[in-house]
Amino acid sequence: MLLYFAYGSNTLSAQMRERCPVATPIGVGRLKGYALAFAGRSATQGGAGVATLRPASGGSTEGRLYQMSEACLANLDRYEGAPAFYARARVHLALPTGGVAEALTYVLPPEAPTTGPRAAYVERIREGYQEAGLSSDAFEALRAAVAAAPPPPLSPPPGAGLWPWREARPPRGPPPRALWFPPKPPPPVDRLLVFAYGNEMGGLRAHGALGGAPLVAIAETPPFFELHSQDDEAILRTHGWSAVRGEVYEVTPGVLASFAVQSAARGLVRATLTVRELSRTGLATGATLRVIAYVGEQRATRRKRLWPPNWRAHAGRGLR
Image (cartoon, rainbow, N blue to C red; front, side):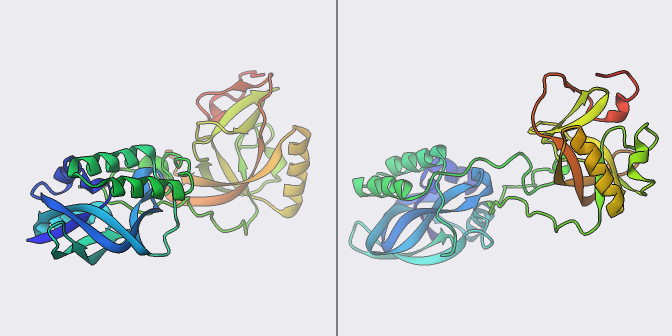
């Protein structure tokens, strides 16, 4: 049997029963020379920080001791994301009886950035401390660690890091805790790819504005846009909740310059987007493209929001 030292939310026995049903709490211990801190960006916490230990001269951290099996520890590895996120560490603890015990615990790497925790996460730790009967020093250390960390970041948008979003599925088994980072931007546009989402699409009345450019792909935006109609023209508006469908064309510099002038006359501005490629049947191929699109950033009173967000479903109906 092994000893495990919990100093964060695993001090709460109900949480430990979910992760390691056979783990048995056997007492408390104090790790000298280390202080409680919050760091990293946990996916399970919406990008917020989680508990870790940092070297501190004269500091100490109280926690709860569990006895568990190797199989139980392996299961706990999955929850803690070890070794990709947390790493196992062997520590020597001072016991209330005056003895010393060796135990395993989990810590973040020293380079993990200090990041504030969610309030609900802190509350679980507080409940665990209370249940374990830790001293007032432990509660003061918790308060100080929260105060020392910057506010937690805003939650990432749904599917962040799991794009394309509609194919994202939770993994089987206990979810590992992993670092969350905003999706890395694709490389800069090296081909002049234009995302056409209105009358410039193939077969519609303004398709000639693309100068006979070849079709590269059918595609759709991330679900952060809206499709509007104004004066029977499509407008892609930012800050929405829809994935707008369109077509990607590879244009020449001259065609792009002309298209830019026409778009500016309609009050649209240039933006660079990442769209995902769709098959002819509308299924995602898994490929993404970095494209140029002309969008309307502000809502206008004469615009009409369209659903579904596919101009082909509305073109020619006299929309205003």
